[in-house]
Image (cartoon, rainbow, N blue to C red):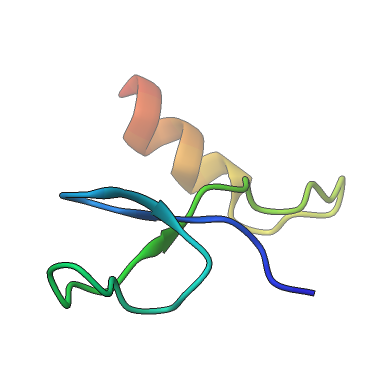
Amino acid sequence: MKRLRKCPRDGYTLKEECAECGEPTKSVHPAPYSPHDKYAQYRRKEKYGK
């Protein structure tokens, strides 16, 4: 099953690379949540500066 992806310039697509501009696309879905995430403290520090 393909997932929706976003091109930084043109909008949304299902492909790994945008057909319009050739840029690589990024996933619009968040990373899966895990209560045993080893790197959560680093992400919070980066996001909130604490």
